[in-house]
Amino acid sequence: MSFDTVLVANRGEIALRVIRACKALGLRSVAVFSEADRGASYLALADEAVCIGPAPARASYLDGQAVLMAALATGAQAIHPGYGFLAENGDFAEAIEQAGLQFIGPTAEVIRLMGDKITAKAAMKQAGVPCVPGSDGALPDDPAACAALAERIGYPIIVKAAGGGGGRGMRMVRSADELATAVATTREEARRAFNNPELYMEKFLEHPRHVEIQVLCDHHGNAVWLGERDCSVQRRHQKVIEEAPAPGIPREAVAALGERCAAACRAIGYRGAGTFEFLYEDGVFAFIEMNTRVQVEHPVTELTTGIDIVREQISVAQGNKLSFTQADIQRAGHSIELRINAEDPFTSIPSPGHVAVWHAPGGPGLRVDSHMVSGAEVPPHYDSLIAKIIAHAPTREACLDRLLGALRELRVEGITVNADLHRLVLSDHAFRQGGVTIHYLEKRLEAEREAAA
Image (cartoon, rainbow, N blue to C red; front, top):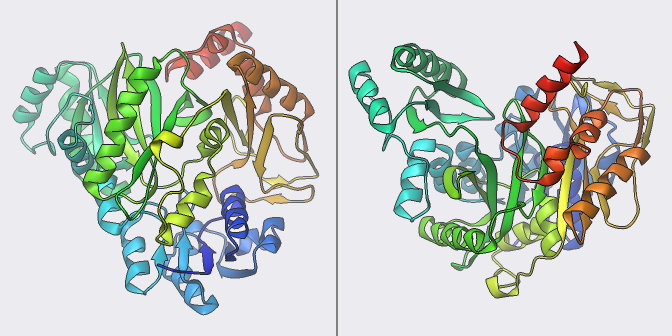
């Protein structure tokens, strides 16, 4: 497990985040890049940088063999996948281990277990983690059996792909006459998108919040939870704003859930950083999935706990014990993260191109995670996330005001970013009250469009 060189199998702000963590631990870092990212400023901060292919992700960042060859060629003994791309690919993790290198994350077996929503839900039920009511396994091919199951669960229900993610492979069904078509359509979509036609069924919650629990685990049976995050401000199933702690949810309820998540990690032999995602409605938590990697929104947990999650993730991959126990974890203040995307704030149309001016905000209680500099290029080939602005303050209200000040200071020229969307939300009375549901943002934008018509 010992290693002194880490290859960072990702790009952009998360690659920079991992490179910085490596430096803090005294480790060498190797950055990989596609032709589209050649010349990106963060590459110079790594000890070595290697081109792994042309611009399309499938020919570079998603090419596990190219990544592995780069690691072997540069003498890297460990690979950090970041998030997205190959981060939750069990085959990639297995190939790394078979090559004698260390994958900084869970084992391939655990990635596969939690990556399949059906087996993940079964494992969580067995571990005592509360789950959304639904099917106990894959949906049968028999339409009559599916119909009977839906009646037992109670409409509305949602049909989901076992291998789905990112909002794909799911359909909500409100009545029996819609079910057969929804199942057939979703099954075909799952087969095409995920090469896995298996589906499952759950009760559709009408007005839930999205709340998640951050965990860290080592190779020695130690597992801790670092608090919860509220990620309910979403658009087309993609998170826009995240915060910690979740406003209005009793701390004792969160603590009970966190302990169950830590126990589940011990039960499945989890290692590294991970996140349990739940829907929360009427005081009840219901498990939906686990992300077996570091999350985009990890900074809000870092700022409220003082724990460097990425550094700890790398340290436990070296075989070290966690540097703290559950009793050592103390949360303070409130933290909120804004995802700054290169896109139109209200249509979400991507805005790649040349960044003529990039001026990030600063000051007390502000953190900006970004690989952007003036003169940078935002390629059209990848996710539009280019920065995260994170505030920390003693209270949620102070945190919101600090972020509004940060947006006034942010200056970006040459491309469009979604700053105006964040200004709208941060100034909105419903959001400032706290506790909005996952449907809040789309309904708020719909009201904005109707007012402008």
